[in-house]
Image 1: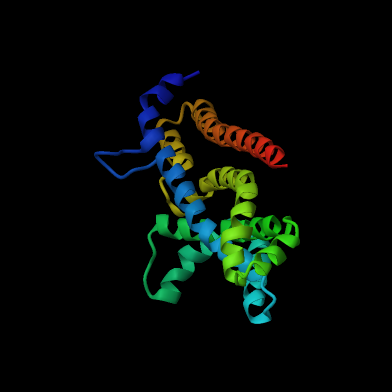
Image 2: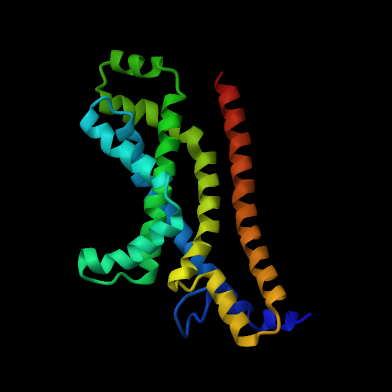
Length: 231
């Protein structure tokens, strides 16, 4: 076994050549996941609420977006944004931006379904009661429905964050210097420790995802106690 290869390159696995060179490794994977879930939350929130609308011209675009994107592999979306951007915008997008855009659009479709399911899971009387108090539909949704629904959606959002964190490994295919690509670079340079290198990055992914999954479980238990106390 050649674990010394891992120890010599551990800093490169964690943050690439930073600060002397560009950021890379696990730091870029986490950055992609954090920015991706942040952008996907707002996109998915809009799509989910649009899908709940009774107006067809509002609902139809959201339905098409969610159903089409959920039926397309994320790797294909990454390729689309990377190779079609020069054609559509007459300008090449950086690899990081292409991957991030694909992750936001892909994850946003799933977040939209989480939002739709979370709102529909609430008793229908909530909206009628809010409207009966003189609130408009938008006010009722903003101050009564969404705060309750979003609280129940937190575990699902965390699970989606875990999934996106693992999906960031696909960004290496277009040259983003995230964790999987840094491991491939080290492996190509040394050629004598592929097992040790890829076991190491597997453990890194596991640790990050395990922390997020444990957080999700604690949130679920906390929310269950909170809801039980409310009853």
